[in-house]
Length: 216
Image 1: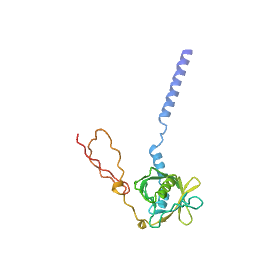
Image 2: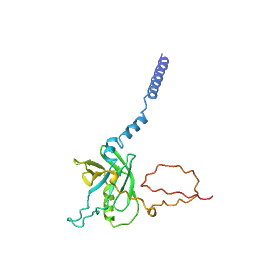
Image 3: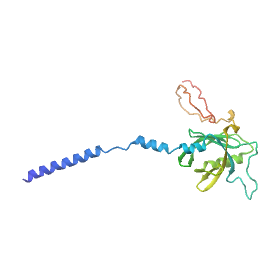
Image 4: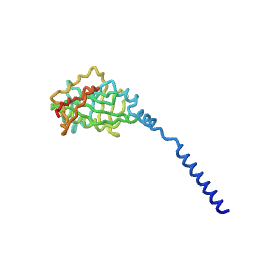
């Protein structure tokens, strides 16, 4: 009798374990693609892009440009126009007073703004103090606010880093990238395999460097 009972209990235990395994196997898996798509929808939302893009933003105030006690203010003459331009593909271009710059940005949440690395040309000029201040404050921005008069305030937490007004892109005098100032990447040592050059869509503000063919 005890042997029969033992066999019966063992069989029941196997049935229960098998049922649990089947239940675990049939548990629905998370839909990874849906999660990725939902996350992408939260980045560079159309609402923020409509505010930022298709216009140029001209600085009217930069934190620190007023100088000490109102003296030695850092400004640009009327004929020199700095600006920032956002593009819908996540690229940013502009002119900081002496050099043109470009990089990337992302809207990670409503009005939340993050910049990637900003790269500029390396010209010298009479307004480098303004440019250094411009670039330093722009890099620290983490969100923006639109004022009642349509200006944009680039903020870092509660601090105002830069205030800009919107102007038509056609009114901007774009600065070309001097060929002599095109930064050249360091040469890679070792063998270089020859590959067919594929035409790519390049940001006009981002200089390209052609690779020379090396004989084996």
